Image (cartoon, rainbow, N blue to C red; front, side, top):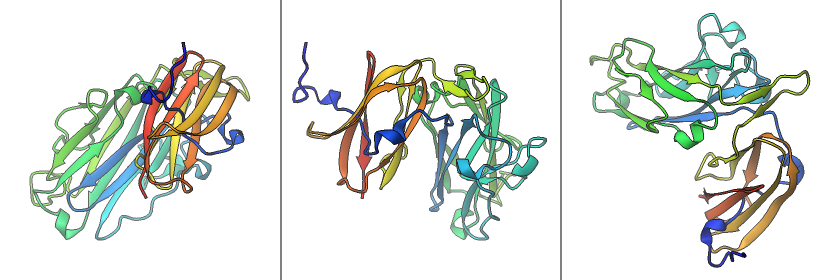
Amino acid sequence: MKVHLSNQLALFSVLVILPLSTMTAQWSSSTVWLKINDDAGGHDSLVFGYHVLATYCTDNALGENQSPPYPPDGFSAVFMGIPSREKCFTSLGMIKKDLRDFSSPKKDTFDINFQNMAPAAQSLNVSVILRWPGRSFLSQRCDSMFMVDRADGSVLPNRIDMFAQDSLVLRGVYDTLGTNSTSPSVRIRILEYRTNLVVDAAPGQERITPKHFALQQNYPNPFNPSTTISYGLPHRSHVSLTLYNLLGVKIKTIAEGDQDAGVHNVVLDASALASGVYYYRLQAGEYTQTKKAVILK
């Protein structure tokens, strides 16, 4: 049975304007993002996860860098070194990205500090919103994920199940005159339990193999001019990636062929595309999935 695109908007296909050579399987991190926004204009997006090539040191090739000193009058958010695991990571932490060694597949921790030293933020009324991907995204990377307070529980009195919700509002966390003893620096920890990824650690053949097919939401979204799309293949499959606009017009078939099992990451450069809504679709064997990407220039 044939299904015409003119009648089925949901069948719009995949997103990407890169040569096929850039889309081969890559041994890549299974990353998760955490967005931080406050009422005083502070904002940042941190990326954490794991990578088979990562170490406890900062890996410049993976986008990790030593963090600068906190700004004297403004917002900052960094990953912090964990005692006994700092090595060359140091206690100052990194900027925005923390990918840990994959040698311990059961559990990992990520310590995060953020603060806003601007005078406008030192108020009991300033709120902070934390956002992260939903369960469907997280479950492709780990079995469970929790957020806890690293200090005395004044910021997070209870453990947050990050699979059960995708955002959290914190109030008065920068108030140095209030009851929050951690002010103006907020100290949280993310605990990640992961056993649902199969690791092939044969010499020279390291890989991350998902248990199921999955097309992830591109990040960031909306974006300008580039975004990253990830998809997972549990076994070697025939893959088709195609991009359609909102009217169902096919823009480009990006890939058509067999690809190995693993996590594939693609960076979309949309500098030549107009602002608007696009649909991208993954076809891999009998698996199909469509997601929406928004270009905002």
